[in-house]
Image (tube, rainbow, N blue to C red; front, side, top):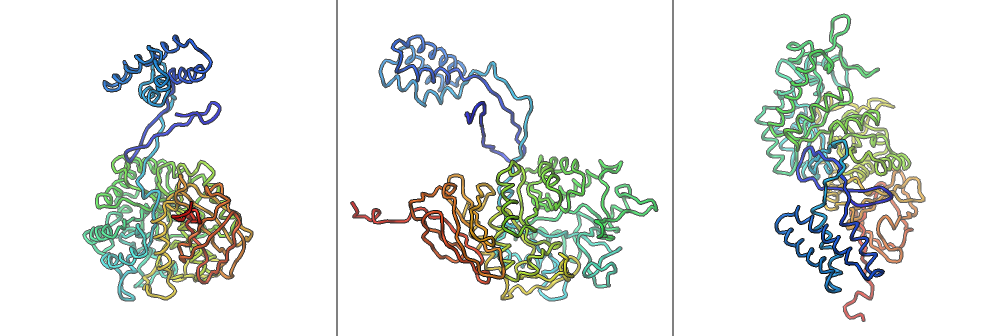
Length: 597
């Protein structure tokens, strides 16, 4: 531990294994350190230091009795030097040097140590918890021919497309059998036609439940083949964990006690007034038979882990018991510490943060609705400057199958570019729902709605992946930039810089040692060219205001020589609405020429 202020100490350690790590804090008097500091002060003022040397010898001798054999021999050497009062100036300097101090730090006298009364716990996750790029896709819409139901084998053929864009996670909505009772039709119609495929979130039929695969998608062997082919391309498959049932789910017949009944004896279907989900029955996590229910849901998770899944996107976890998540995630991670859970929780901040503390590795955020410069700045500064980032990892999604934000509805292709650039650079973790996003799907069911017209949640889609308006090349370029720049791989060290234009936001991200610095300038107006001046906080970037530096735009490959804090910009939304600039501090001058002297 080290002193960082009046009566404030700081300590740290590097955890070596995944999973839970329990720790506490102990403190004791550093008698050798106290003696050493006093000796340094006395050296120039006192001539007779014999007693002080002997005190030091006693302290070192005591440490030797606690030391390992090799270190004990080294400490014995120091004892002899101390008893000899440092026979020369060089030995006196050595006695007070770093070598002996470091050795003594290894063998403190802890007989009277005071221990903090609580044992604390942190959870160590793998790298993907901190840095990932997610792509959501409906397998049933992967068929090569329009009107045909896609399969997991068709999804396998789509992997090269996903990999080419640079995504390392492919997230699949529920792949289980879909119920028939109260099945929803196109555009969430309450009456389905004979050819309507229903919502994948209405899980369960006579063909199985949460551990079964929809027969039209394929078999478990097909799923395992998809997992293997994805791994070959550096892609990890994430499954949707939606703990809810259609009225036809086997649980309804076999365990009616797991559902809440209304006074008329019917099972309560899901509601979020004014919305009604007659095709979905919520589970009752507080049923008197809660233990059996909880054990069964844990079994579902372990089933998919046994088949290679180690990433789960959890549907609406804030509508289930927090105590369940704390228990279930804890149980799973005790056996499989590399498993990660993403919380799809658009809810109150306190509840989102509580889910993170319950074990969720990442969470969806309000980024989806933060569009203006003040909204974005205030939202992300809260994370950067508060203690929330110690346990809450944001995942930024500009769209989902449920949410087509108004900004995307009205801003054209430029709006999609803007929101993607912001998501991929402000967040170390982000995701998109595609191909709707890269193909710039922007038509809502009606004005004021955030639902997609002809939503893929309720019907098959056939996407034109070769469309000229596709953003796939831009997405691939930015994902490559993310992989090549460590500054963009963490949410720490985010700093906002002033601009004189309210439609342009500027921020930087850097590594702790400032060896990698990225500055992002983004036009938030999808309709007009924006110009102006930025005022960089050079201190936060470790830049010398007297020296010129190079700003290399990794999007356009343009290079700018900037000097000082104030610099000019122009951003045109139709082409590239942003700069993603890598800072190169060293700009050569004549003094760097070989023959300059």
